Image (cartoon, rainbow, N blue to C red; front, side, top):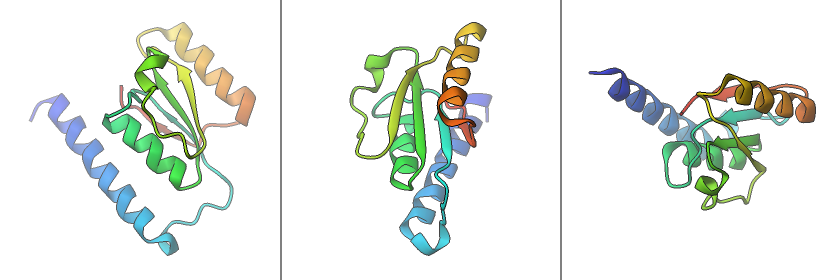
Length: 114
C-alpha cells in the first residue's frame, strides 16, 4: 500500500467513525464548540464531507482550499467558514492559522486532507 492509499484509507476510516458517532448523540458531547481547520475542503470530496459532518456536530469549521470557488458546493447549513489556504506556501499557512487564532483564540482539531 503506497502513502496515498494509506492516507486515503485512514481518512475514509475516520470519516465513518465520525458518522457513527454522530448517529448516536449520546456518544458525542460537545459543550464548547470545537474549532476545526480542514485542508483540502473542495465540495464533493472527503474534506468537504468532513466539513459538513463537523458542522452538524456543532463545531466551528474552517474549510480551506487553494481556490475559494472549489468550495462553492459545500452545504453551509452549519457553521462553516471558507478560507483560502495553499499548504505549499508557508507564508499562506501562517496567515491562515493566524486569521483563525485571531477570530477564535485557538484551533482544536486539524484535519490535513490536502
